[in-house]
Image (cartoon, rainbow, N blue to C red; front, side, top):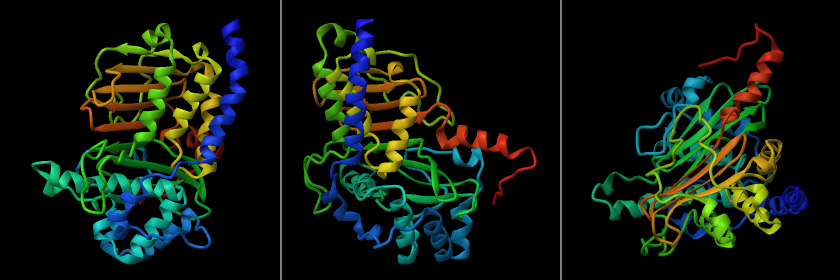
Length: 370
């Protein structure tokens, strides 16, 4: 009972810390973005554009053949076919877009992301510049091989539609009703190299870490644990070679491992929630806050933090944060190559929200597909 009471007292402080972290998103990788600013509009519009109007403008700016690739059916099968390795992507790639298409696509991104979040997307794309020189098959790396796809028919009255941006080490998915975002998951960010080893022109500087904030907050939490709690948190001597949920259409809860939220001090609980916030700070504040509300609804007491592999920097490791409704994974099995993902067991692609909508709408209600 004493542990639970401590958790209860710390809960309010933790929530305030997490909300503050969402509001005060850290500036991220802006210098990296300089190398690929040609891909996206560099300045935000004076008046923010709605998601549906930005999507409609992208459609209108696309020639007929591009529209056929851009517009996809709003089905579970189409939307859950995703991956984070280099491959041919559904949708229209940045390299194939006109200036008008790129401007509209950038405004679509801005409907969900902060400017720092947009920089984070640019930074992941820019890492392809480093891979061109670091890998034997580097010439195939392309910082503009990232595609936008729109699912369904976007308009402010639409009952349901969605879109995504996807390419190597990036897969962000969005589900909306009209202009209201009802789901922002699944979410995948990767970084290779996780720490840039040297300068690559003006685009990438030595020491850049696109996902460094996530790693640093996790290490602060791990270092704060007592020997007893650290022994509970470190549940395996080796990482697993990748995130264990991979790219499955529906993620299942991994075995619950690691140290429980209720076992942490108030300061450690705040640090864990700050770590969680690092995986949402690219989002507009209201969307990040919606994730917090959902996370809290699943119960903070259900959350566990676990670690696998080495604890010294530069060596292979893995950590995950898991609750009743979600899992966050962060894998660096190669030592300098990160994969991270946030999955919602019932809410990826807004499945639970849309299922409730369909139940309320009745059996005759259908959404149009292309």
